[in-house]
Length: 134
Image (cartoon, rainbow, N blue to C red; front, side, top):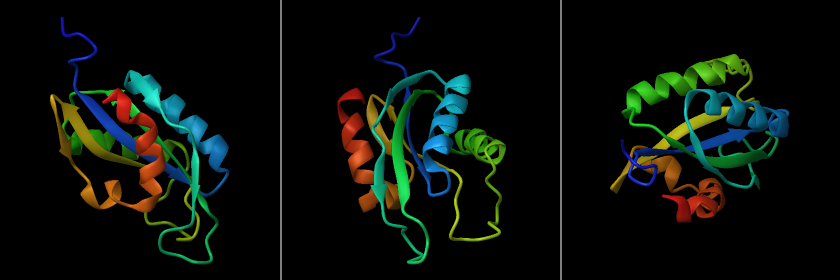
C-alpha cells in the first residue's frame, strides 16, 4: 500500500462571490466526499478578475489525494459546481456561486495543469498557505 506522503495529490483552487462563505464550506464538504482532503487554506478575499462591477471573491485552496488525470478530475469538479448552483454559461457573469479549478498534480514532481490560474494574484495567498503540504 502506498503511504499518504507518496500518494498523488491535486491542488484545487475554489472561488465564490455569491454567499461565498457558505458556498466554499459546501464545496469543501462535497470535495471531501469524493477525495481525501489533505489540507485546506484560509480564505482570502480578492477583487473580481474581469468585471469591475462584480462583488469581491473569496478564494481557498484545497489539496486532495487523487491519481485522476486532469480531464476526469475536471468532470468531478464540474459536477460539484453544478450541485452547488453553478450554471454554465452563467445567467449573470458578475455572479459566481462556486468555481473549482484543478491547478496541478503532485506525484513526486509538480505537474502544472493550469498555469494561467495558478499564476494569478488571487491564487497566491491560498496556495502559499498550502506550500508545506505538497
